[in-house]
View 1 (cartoon, protein in one colour):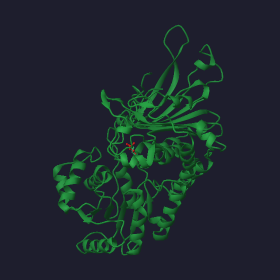
View 2 (tube, rainbow, N blue to C red):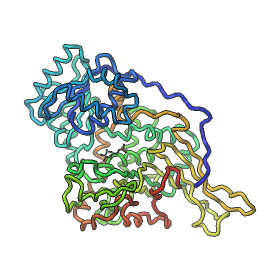
View 3 (cartoon, rainbow, N blue to C red):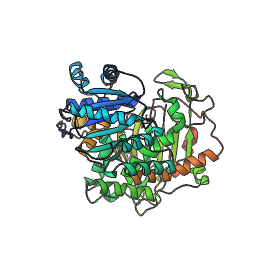
View 4 (cartoon, rainbow, N blue to C red):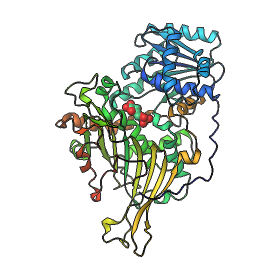
Length: 518
Ligand code: BG6
């Protein structure tokens, strides 16, 4: 561990957020976990900081029979305990709760939609906005009937105000189902009104990847195969499946994390500089990265990927059950809770540079980061052998302890010329001294303002599946992995260590990581 160089002489002022257009937010899946834990806290916060208009209202839709007040009480619990509702006060909530409405109904049935239309019109007559933002936060199988239902009821096109739809992941479960869903969506909605959300893109630290690379002159010249040896992208969670066993059984770590969040991190790390910060320029360059990622044959999948599933273990000193003992999970489940993949990008900039990506639940630490390992010096001037020369590493810490560090060798004080690894460190907290808005807050505001830059385009989703589907298919055909193959609270499956064959290196350790290891 090296010393720290603190970057900020003074705290900078938090940015003032702009106001979104007025709108009525209609949430499908309103009794679900995401609405309570993420969407409502984000909307509450936007209302508190003055980003919503006076005619802003929320209409939740769910199958459970609830009165408006019951729905409000459920949402109160979510907002009061969520760290995303940064400005929560009981007084503020009482004001916000007046804007919460609820409609019971089965969104999977076509006859629900005339009822929904009547409710929206009734709310608009009483002063709700003519702009309507539909948010689909349901199981994947409900997305097509919801989109069709809105279309048939005439709710999908701009009327007196705008109409926009936000689609939560997963967008299908493979390439074919994603294409099918996209076909339905494009028949019903104008693509400019469609916002496919990947909440990682709403994180300040993720957006900062572009700022770091393209807003500074010194990194881009070395950001290529001539200087970079390999790149590691990690999303490690201590959490297990948190009551979402049934959902997770259908999903697994590859679909849940790698197919979207991890590929987004990879794209932002690897993309070419766009000519402008225009939504299509940015997204076009991201999709180019995906098109250059090598798809794998079954044999390559066997060699370049590792699956894992956690068994019982210890997290923060407390015993926790194995995945197969979680509610909603089959006792002989073969679903992976850990996935590691070696990707290759076959283009001029990245040929020969492996991108090692891993995501897993119930690991030794919570840590999401991108570590860019530079090549060693061509001569081992201060070490006995070349393998002792440190790599320079730039680490972008997405969460927690958000920041960026650069590790390098410095001369240890003394008569000898001994290199010791030290870090220069930028910490969001030290520099800005403020909590940044939650990802959902940023993204919901972008939808209200009609800015799709941080949303996934149709071709991007399909390109993601083009890479992931062959891995899923090969895993289904290859002999099953010996699950469980890692203990909760560990570094993950031992097999994953064999994935990085590169130069006798290994994954950056998770345990005891404080975000500044190298
Ligand atoms: C979600 C996944 O998309 O992302 C979850 O479905 C995962 O399984 C979560 O826990 C991680 O998000 P974050 O913002 O906590 O890194």
